[in-house]
Image (cartoon, rainbow, N blue to C red):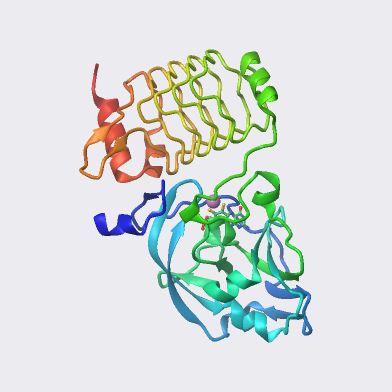
Length: 345
Ligand SMILES: Nc1nc2c(c(=O)[nH]1)N[C@H]1C(S)=C(S)[C@@H](COP(=O)(O)O)O[C@H]1N2
Ligand SMILES: [Mo]
């Protein structure tokens, strides 16, 4: 554990194999045509390969650490595939080619992009095996990108096309939901804040009505927001540290990586909310309803390197949680929560 934590970027938590959460889209587009891989754009030799041709390319195994933006990491995963650089050089890029945009065979044509220079230096793979078995469909099988040194949203599942570009083209998460285009886990390049002014933020906070709004990165620390209406709000990375939030309604809100440290959340509703990577250390969670919420990488208590728990939340039998959803937590967090829920106070 101590050795592992050296390889852990700031504010990431280790999950132990064989757990591997499925994040984002769950399956490729349903499409009867055979799988192909196409490279297009600023190249002299546009080309399309069949899946069998890709799988017959020279392959290598690379060991890499996976860091999800929602704060879970899995170290030393082994991926087998063909180096992206080799495939790319074979199609003879133009001199002005600077970016690769990866496009998925998925319902929303999911995409993400990487500077060519980065790909040349960090040898990403077009991968078809993880830890010695073919990539499961939900993890991007038959073909996905894996690149090291970036949050995992740069590793596209169900790769079907690579566009070679002179100018960058923001991917799905980067353009739609404010994921940082740099994605460097060591610099915590997770999200860029929404563009609202301080004045607008102050007005929203006093209205206590966030329903359906995009307020990612909002800073409301220390505010009194009892009875807040935040159903369906997009509040990734929002700061509610130390807030008064009794009976607040966050049902179906996106709260991934939100901060609730020391917040008073008695009777708050988090049903069906996305709470991946959210932090509830020291919060009062009595009477809260967390049923149906997604909890990957969430934390409820701060565990010091010595193993001591600090910033303990108020949790008891009145806190409603699906026991199965706790499997998404690290072992330490799960054991702590189970023990607290069982205790009659
Ligand atoms: N096609 C596609 N690729 C994608 C995504 C997606 O929604 N669609 N999500 C990204 C994100 S945010 C992450 S963290 C990883 C998750 O990969 P996994 O489900 O295999 O863990 O895939 C990335 N690639
Ligand atoms: Mo992610």
